Image (tube, rainbow, N blue to C red; front, side):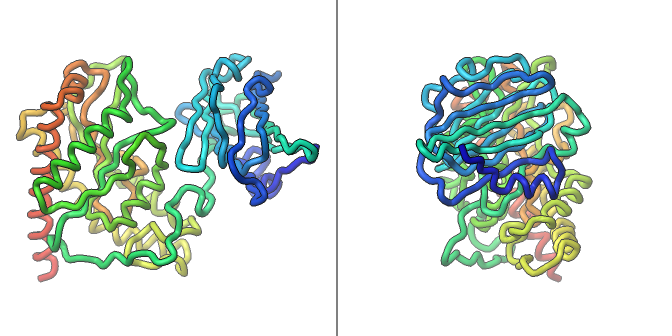
Length: 412
């Protein structure tokens, strides 16, 4: 068999022997099928070995994620039909397995690990006679420091961003209050990522249903244009969600969620904006990317170095951050005005990736906890969801009026 490791050796040289692995080959195409009977995920002496038998070679990437520890494999594209965790897992170090499509043409496998096993190697072997392929991945001995140093999604230009448009529509900047308010609704999770789960209820399905109802409420009221990051049960990466908001020329970004806590009695609605420390880290991380078309709307950062890009994004956030704070407060006031329960400390700050657009006021709304019976009942009740949608509509109108007035003061 011939071994195709493609970009893997280069990554070893640049990042060390446990860096995320990526392999791509343009000669691979179409749909590959997994041979579950010939594939195994097993414990080794100190770590984990994964062997996947495929009907043909496909482009792939392999990396690890923390919190909790996971091994992630992306493919273009593998058919998982009939494969289950029970078919593949033969050891104790992989606790669970999720298989599915993450976007059209791309498949993902996520293996939940019982400890932080660093990625040691990954390679694809293709039989020159039959064309069948075997992907072999090795994870080393559990080491929290080593795992933390090498974990994270590889940032490969074009891997998970909207496809470049030959003749992209130029979004002309509008004065605040001019024209309809363009709202990007972001139903959290989706596809292979179900989010919180309680019984047969999943966050991804419940929140998508609410997003559709909220969109309908806003459009019926008039004065809004509504775009959604997903309209079906599909996986959309966090980075892609933000990029889609820029492509749509969104005025505001609302990410919708409903958490679940196993050991707490938390109940009520809360809203998150990006924390100060997280925004600094976000600027630095975004400035390092080579594909900068979706970082800052209206500004071409492609010819700017990292320091200049970082400064420009910080300047954008000087204006955006207080606008996002006021949006979050308006949202919470809207819920309170409808008698909807709020968390004891409802306004919070965190480093959620979907809040990191430098120039779009962004708020993550936790609509309640699936682990709270009253919250779950409200989320499943059409009348309860209607009250929440009305509260958000009124909050957006109030925020827009205030934001337009403040813009007039600034221009003076």
